[in-house]
Amino acid sequence: MRVLVVGGDSVIGSALIPALRGRGHSPTGTTRRRTPINLKETVFVDLASDESAALPDTDAMVICAAMAQFAECRTDPELARRVNVTKPLELAARILSNGGRILLLSTSAVFDCLSPLRKPDAPRSPRAVYGKLKAEAEIRLLNCGAGASVLRLTKVLRPDSGILAAWVETLGLGQTVEAFEDHRFCPLPLHAVIDAIIAILEAGEDGIFQVSGAADISYGDAARLIAARIGVPTVRVTGVRAVDRGIPESEVTPYTSLDSGRLAALTGFVPPQPFAVIDKVFQSSIARARTRLRE
Image 1 (spheres, rainbow, N blue to C red):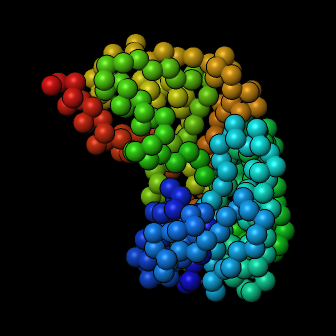
Image 2 (tube, one colour):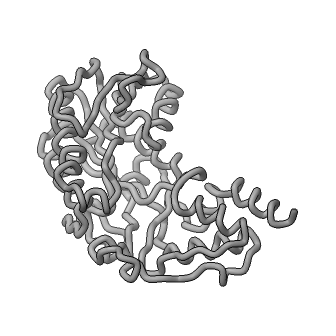
């Protein structure tokens, strides 16, 4: 297939493009950069802009790009709506009208995050602005009919960025960190998302899929695990409440895990356990931190 990856230089998009190529597909990524690194395999598309984008002929489009920070969506909802709803749906309509397929990456934040393992057909009940925008995008896309699909994700971890990566560095220096006890997440490795996207595209199935870890853990639990793996006392992790640090209650997520049954039926996917995901993703950086402590 000819696959257009919107957000080709995003975390997921940049991993998806070589994986698609490895499966024999022909991917093209989009970028907001006016001077992309690879002109032959990249086109300019700015979801924040009102200007029309020139799209290549394509059989499928995967929408990876998003304005996903809760605080940014809350403080600039107009821009967030353009990036997360208006512009992606405009692009999707053009592809669908030519007989192509669309896969929109979405989030567990389309639910209220007050109970675990939400099923795909559970009523949407977003509390945060980001979740409300993604819920709107889902509904509008799926109402387009044949060729439209959604993949909801839990939190994707990567070893070189994010709060957990920062904790590995800080705890490895013998310093202390603060971590939320009332704010939870469901960790997922990047390769699980890439595998799910490709499987859905190749199966050609419509509707809602979900890919999730097995369970939710608090950020405090994650930080204490990292401390233990590095070999520093877990008392160097100070547990705090997100609401006491200025996080609006509507953005605190006691549960983000999703039911991945439909994906499991398609691919045999087994949701990974949270501590196993953290161990795998941060294995190398934890080992380096442990070595530094011994020096």
